[in-house]
Image (tube, rainbow, N blue to C red; front, side):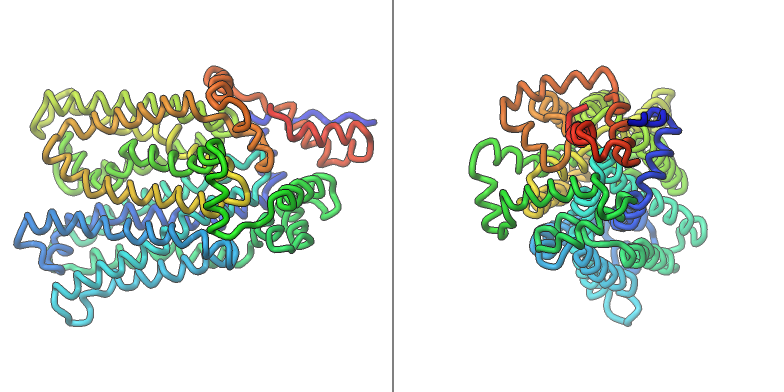
Amino acid sequence: MSTVAHQPHPNSAAGIWLDFKQNRQAYLMAVAACWGGMLFGWDTGLIGGILPRASFKRSFGLDKNPDAYADLSGWIVSVLQAGCFFGAMTSAFVSDRFGRKKALFVAAFFFHLGSLLQTIPTLNGQSKASSLNQLYVGRAIGGFGVGLVSVVVPQYVSESSPKHVRGRLTGMYQLAIVFGIAFSFWVNYGLLNQFGESPDKPAQWQIAFALQMIPGILLVVFMLFQDESPRWLVEHGQNEQAKHVLARLRSLPDSHPVVVDELNGIVEDFIKKPKLSLWEQAKECTTSKKMFYRCSLPFILMAFQQWTGVNSMNYYSPVIFQELGMQGAKATLLGTGIYGIVKIVMTVVVLALGIEQYGRKSTLIWGGLGQSLCMFFIGAYRKIHTDSTVIPTSYVAIVAIYLYVTLYSFGWSVAPWPAMSESVPNRVRSLTMSIGLMSNWLFNFTISKLTPILLKEITYGTYLLFACTTLLGVIWAFFFLPETSGYAIEEIHMLFEGNLVKQSLKDNRYLFHRVDRQKFMDQEQAIRHDEISTSSDGEKAIDARNERV
């Protein structure tokens, strides 16, 4: 038997490039679906730069009463999350009934309808009160589409990805979100430079709302050339089509052992535990304490992600930067734009060099610890320095904000998406992912309403609160979250069958060294080249693919 040619280490730049070339169809699939993430990020990041503009306030009659403006601006932000909550709620039914791909088209329709209503409310000669009501309706309808996308994209990507890059590809969804947020920041900055603070230029905010439709259009165009999730196809009896999709995504022939082995694993899992209705899924989630906990992971991960306080930064970063000493609309928007760029760069780094090499658990723990320290420092600074004058420590506080988002990108930004989508059983993934994203939007809504109140009433305590809740998430991950990287989706149940705390503590060994994926990648490469596919050693190598590295 011939030996396998030496391959570059998978953690090296050459190894990552080789991985991309071998799995290019899977990467293209993830790129296509993750336009939904950019849609998500753009829509959520946009509003923070629109609300303070004089033209927006005048268009909706919010320029005369500061108290009314403060209350209504909170509702303008929050009504989107309400729509997102209900979009996430219906995602299980829509994606199960019509498929993941068609569910994304449904989401894009509602998003574009909502965006259109947000763009044109003052163009029909109606009263300012009626225009504001139309804006609310547009935000809610658009939010419904965003909520649907937020569940279906990570579900679709996770179900379609090879296991050794599943974390990276699912994490690309978070990269797309931060891209969208950063683009929205810079669009707001560009429009402010173009139109200034004139209250008579409604085009300033109308153009901003219109431009958010771009990622939605790209989502539809790119997904036209992608296939349905292979696991959804198996659930609906389309095994041959599922085999073809797997082969295309793996860049292999339909008859290749890697494709056949993966399909057999999916089919076997489905035969053992066939497709359930939503009510049956709900009952299945409560069959035992361990199953209930496993099915609760999406809810828990999304709740802790929100309570790191990151979306308080996304929505109210101009206000926060102003509190820390940045003066003027352009300065605060510029600071916010740089904040967005830092998130993009760090998310790219983590996807390339972190999420597969270090796993989900270690990035959550180390990233969360760093975030907590930054928030504790900012809280202490705001306690000692109570006004917005600039002192030397002000610059350190601004740096702490950027360090905070760097560490968020390393931990609670990317890792929750693959961890939650791969941890739950196939047969209840639709329901549990829906509940997880309902948790995301519920706490997103809560924090978007609470943040301006907290910043006004307890000031420095806002940062201390988020520091403590982030630290609580770190403790939970340390004791109660097993490491899920390196397993096929159908095998992850093994992690939860024994003592959960014992397994979680055992997996903490990855906190201090990288996962060595070289042996695993060599086995994949050997099978891919058919060099051992017909021998007994080949069968052992295929089995070894499913071992923990």
